[in-house]
Amino acid sequence: MKRFAVGLLTLGATINAAPSAAPPTATVRNGTYIGVHSDTFNQDFFLGMPYAQQPVGDLRFTVPQSLNESWDETRDAKAYSDICVGYGTDSIWYPQSEACLTLNVIRGSSAHKNAKLPVGVWIHGGGFYQGSGADQRYNMSAIVQNSYAIGKPFIAVTLNYRLSTWGFISSSQVSGTGNTNLGLRDQRLALHWIRENIAAFGGDPDKVTIWGESAGGMSVGFHLTAYGGRDDKLFRAGIMESGGSIYASPSNYTTYQSSYDAIVARVNCTNTEDTLQCLREVPFETLNAVLNGTDGSPQYSFTPVVDGDFVRNWGSIQLNKHEFVKVPIISGTNTDEGTAFGPTGINTTEQFYDYLTDGAFGFQTPPMVAKKILELYPDDPSQGIPEYLGDKRVPSMGYEWRRTSTFAGDFTMHANRRRQCEAWTEASTPAYCYRFNVHSADVPLLSGATHFEEVSFVFHNIAGLGYHYGKPFAGVPQSYFDLSSMMTSMWASFIHDLDPNSGVVNKSVHWAAYGKETPVNILLDANTTSHMESDTWRKEGIEYINSNAPAFWR
Image 1 (spheres, rainbow, N blue to C red):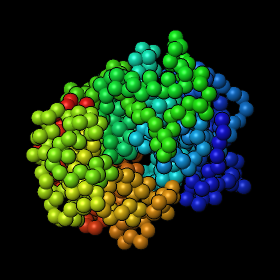
Image 2 (cartoon, rainbow, N blue to C red):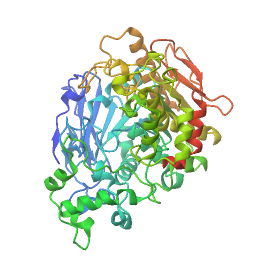
Image 3 (spheres, one colour):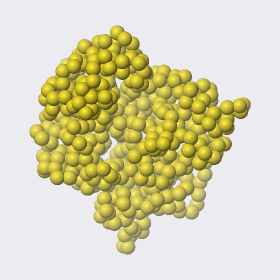
Image 4 (cartoon, rainbow, N blue to C red):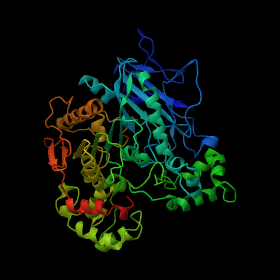
């Protein structure tokens, strides 16, 4: 398994074995690993450790298999492995291969085998087709360091899982073998590995929080509802940033059958008796060339599907039935999510209607539902996002771009988040919900407080590590840094105590749990004092989306 250096991934930290002490080691069930020490952060890193047999050869397109080897020698865990094959700008910066099912552990150097520290497991986003646990934007050193500073220390874990076609291939042939939703099953096996081995690094297997953003937040949501909400005792809490249990996904494999058939045809497997086995035998370079789009995006779009096994039903149905693991959660979205997801070039109500009903939306919305959406999301720019534009339109994006973006944000993110918080409250389980309302320096002003913008604040990534197209904290006022300090402390406190308030110093607001009679979010803002707000904005539109969830494959 190839590995790549860690130096640039640690906020400029010096990484070496301290001359006065032996390098850090940890003995897991299979053998002993030797990691690296960071003098700058006083942390130990154990990197690129396999949590499964690598999905190559006959294990390609197969449910992940537990490790089947042990060793007596000490093995290096000093560098990240290759990341899983992905297509997009999140992945292009890192070496990729099929042999990628590894995880990384970051701990304070004072942690010892019996420390029993809480554990935060980060599941990266990227639309289920790109990204990795090695992405520099998710550097754990700052938040782990801060957790020690506020007296709420935790151990961090990041991981890779299979992506795009490699991780979510779907068809009648795949469904018939049970090899569905492989990327989610990779994550699940990683959680089992953590359950069995994290104590060797000083972690408490009974105090694991799973945590992610976008597709990572959706992954957390899937684990909360997996196998009908079965509690396998793999985690005691979840954090979902801009993603959750309600995900617009096909009800079965048939949606992707034509894509599967096209791939099979392009690699000359059509006339074979077992097309899935034939795909396993195609050379990597040949298959990857077929799957990689000309612009670096995936040629074929495969995402999680309802398979009747791992994903038993649409998330909206499971939440309504309270078929989920009853653990505390943080769940939130960013005010202007829709600027990242709304269609451009729509200039009339008729075009918006056509977009909703003709399949461009991803599926065909029933006409009656589409007409109601037009009513609830009127052609009034003053009701659109971003709010700072007032009643102005943005013709370059489409005369109705603010209208369509408002709906897209509610449909894609806000409605899901609200229903998640409501369902937890109905089940008498704590839910801490938020709305992030900051425009960062790394995106155009027109994007507003858009998708992904909270990530740098949570990780306290002041240096902008891994941000190749703009630094989120470049030239911003002190209030941005203060908000980041508060947020990173809240996340660490929740991982440590299941209470985001417990370790926050100089906090301006007490983050109250969501209530059935008092549905509230914390409004996280750098331009005004963060405060609690009633979670009733765009009430009618969001209620309609949630009450008609099956019309949207949710």
